[in-house]
Image (cartoon, rainbow, N blue to C red; front, side, top):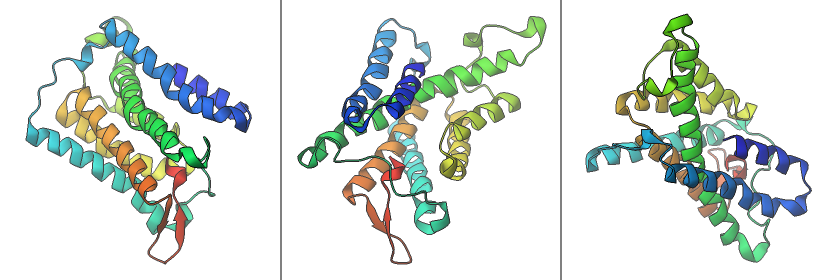
Length: 229
């Protein structure tokens, strides 16, 4: 997560000519670190996930619902929309849109869900739980069960999820956070939330890409949705 945030800050300070390289680096570096530490057995919270077709289907449904909650408000309420901008599918050239979208999909729908869920709902939620305790009651966050409920840690973690995004995203992010937190405490394992997160991000990207980034809202106005990805 730290590597990703540093690359985001670096990318914001580099000229446009460097953005194609940053598109690759933003998922390649965190992804490589993720695979390295996974190979070292450093993510025990990913083990022991037992599911069924029905439960898996519900995870996918929650992910799709999350995507609808992200896209819908920006189509319904013009005042929520930011200035046009966001991801440029032609940054690698007009003939390489498919490559740019593929690279973005790998980072947005595959690497990001693992990185964010391990950082926020696995580490941060449990670390805050032990950090907020007093004296001898503090302990190793790894001994706190996954999806352990505590009001203070829940509120602080949710605030991080919301305010780590752009201001125009805060409203939809708050709804998505509440939905996925409720699902997390229901499923009680980090893997289903990685799947939910991946489905949400993947569905948003596919919707925007398949519509060429422009969708007609209820008022007949074409809305540029590349800001979502």
